[in-house]
Image (cartoon, rainbow, N blue to C red; front, top):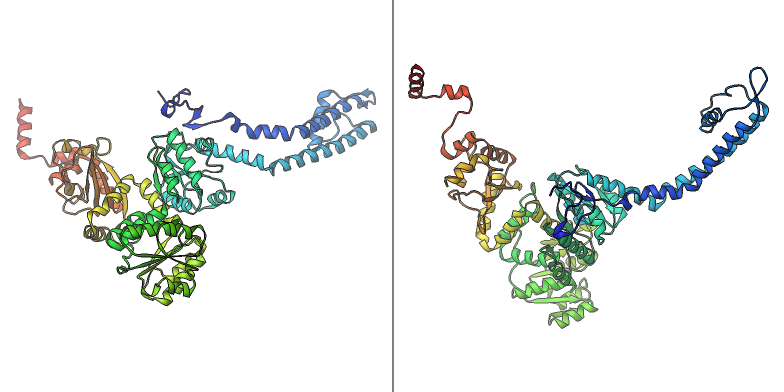
Length: 608
């Protein structure tokens, strides 16, 4: 069934509304602005029409004189013509003959009536233009038109907070298109003012509403993914539910800080649920146990162009102090305790303190920025401290006071507001959690290159020494800035020049990554991951024999990507890198390179 069929079936047999380019169109939304104008301007327009009609009628009834002084009356056409240029302040003169005093008196009355009518109509129009409902209707129509004109794949971003802004810049740098929904007028205004290369449609709307998601192109054939990144877990749950039910084929990335909401999200399809508190705990344990693996993961999630992060110093084994037992502190404490690390919690009181007591955690009641409380928690003998409350000034105070007590502490802080970024930067903490950036990096890794997400999931099992070798090899080939990452499928469509070679099992990975013009030169690229059906190979060696249908995750410089693309589509280039034999491609080169025995056979055939 073609996409142009207005009766096509939507996902799971749900019939879609009338669409254009796959985007649902609602007659009610499309005509809302028109009907609002008609309702608000009905009386002013009726007044204008009435004044104009009375003026024309009166002008035909008032007697005048022709050039010979005989009685004469204006026709309806002449009266309409005169009032048209008079009411519009153009002015043209008295036609067809000079007016009598009676006619001029009537024209004066009509002029003042028309001025009053126009003032009333213009005032009503200005009021309408400032009306919130009218502006929303216009914005909705403009948004719908922009979404309908998108003829390329795009991502639907629900929530344009700090995380959404970071992702928008990252995907825009990759040339990926976005459609944004957010309930905040200020955030959509910030989107319009953002220095993005692409035109990103944005709409102030309730992301919980399935209708808002459909208007934003959820059911469009060009929609290739959904990101639920608002500050409201319930709103993110609603977006995940709508996407799973209306478009179960789409990948969904959702943010939450509640484990319970995360489990509810998992009940609808297979979304990628990112809990920044849980993920930071996993990252912390990786940084403690496998610093090279953590360095590699952080580098790959940073996106092309990001600098190789420092490994940083590694904390000693011993007891940790966690300041704040909210959701973040509770998640980190649980991760540390599961790893066999002794933890002391500092909490001021309230439900969080009761939760610490119920969990059986050793705690000290009080303010973590108080020197006495820190000493009671044993900061002087601890190896690390986590300032993890929801208040940035409190976290900074805790870190500064703890450092004064124990200069050798491994300090971890939590930054909630980007306005405090300069202060945290000056503090030079050993590790810093910025929940918005962590979610953005995880979502970017999942949607920018889906194979990268799978690679990151399987990478920790390879060990820290393996990660250190991979980092060294990447730096040797591509430098200390992360090169481009791209996915390659060895199919007839994407690699037509390799089709016959793949069928004969003669394509080795090391040969493929050679320069098509100088075979002895290796490309500045590295195969990170190869997937073959249900089998996967992490950083395979050069002797791996590739097969048709293999999927490769590669990292390399743009020049290497261009050169590899030549090998994939040009038969002579593929033959050269695989066999070291050059095959002439033009008639002249084939003629000049023809062997003497071949020429002899051709001449003998011609003599016959």
